[in-house]
Each structure stands twice: as C-alpha cells, then as structure tokens.
Length: 249
Image 1: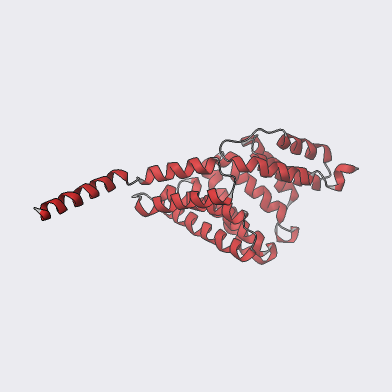
Image 2: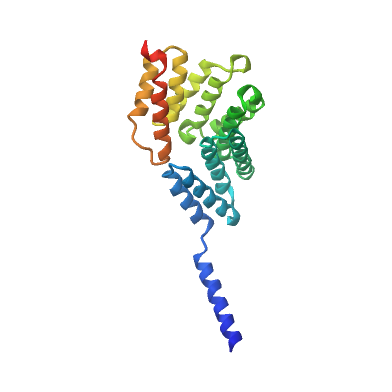
C-alpha cells in the first residue's frame, strides 16, 4: 500500500512538473517582452537567462542563438571594464556565428556577429582590429543581399559607422559613410542611432545645419517600443554632441 501511495505521489509530482515546465518558445517570448522594456542591467541579465534556458531545451536553437548575441551586445555596451567588454562581445560573436551555421540565409546572425565584432574592435582599438573589418563588411553585405531593410537599414548603418571610424589609410571614407547612413535613414527614418551617426558624419563635412536637424529630430522623438533604452541613450548622446564647438559658431 505504501509503495502504491509513493508511486502515485511520484507520478503526480512528475505530472505537475511537466505542466509547469515552460517551452522554449514561451521562454523566448518572455525574454523578448523584457527586452522591449529593458532600461537597466538587471533586466538585461534576466533577458539573457531566459534565452539561455530556451537554448537548452529548444529543438531549433536559431532564435535563442541570435537573441543571446543581441543581448550580449547590449550588456557589453553597458559594462565599464574593457576586458569584460571584450569577453562579452566575443561571446556575442560566438553565438551569432552559431546562428549563421544553422540558418545561413537569414540576416539575424550576420547582423549581430557584425555589430559585436565592431564593438570588440572599438574596445581593442581600431588599428589593432583591422583584421575584423573584412568580416564585418562581408556580414553587412550579406544582409544587404538578403534583406536590406533588416533592423531599419542596419547593415548600411554599420557600414556607415565602419567607414567613419576607419582612418583613410585603412580604407575609411567620410563619403562612403555618408552614402550608407543616408541609405539607412531612407530605410529606417525613425532610427535614432542612424541619425546620430549621420549627424557626426555631417559635421565632418562642416554641414552644421543639417547635423543639427538630425540631432533635434532625435531630441523630439517619442519612445520606441522595440527598445525603450535606445531612444533615451541617443537623446543623451545628441545633447552631448550639440556641445561641439561647431554648433556655437
């Protein structure tokens, strides 16, 4: 009798656990919901935990892989220690590459591989990271081939920034930077990062009025439900850039 009771209890516990266990899709959906409202590192770590848990149980791990790479980018951006930032961005590259291996004809993996590589290079130093330029350009050009509208013209935004940051001797070009950023703005006119980058490039051409227009557009933007933190951070950067002496002439 006791054995039957123990067996019944065990079966009930197993049944309840099965009912309470979340699917990979549910975990990813919860991570996405947190991501959209994310404004602090604690929330970012919770997002990462949701995606990591989903990755463990998902049959198709593609979404978990590229979304881990995406949240690693955010976390790395908000860390202070350079060594820690490099580690996190390199992890982002790793998971994005695994996403590419699963779905080589989808843009997500290429995009988050490229931006994590770019941030890794910035932290390490542009001249020390020239070997990354080719892979970043290849990834962005692949996205242009697959879906140029991805992430509001994200591939052109990244290429525009790469050409802006690179010294001329290493292939940098303010003309190409402007060309790609204007294309990105055409594809995603409400993206604050594109407009911020474009304003910086326009200043290099001494087109102060046009640069001011881009920054004022950012300052007048409403919050973006897709990423609450992005608009606020870009507004802060826009205010800082408006302190440039060129705007005071």
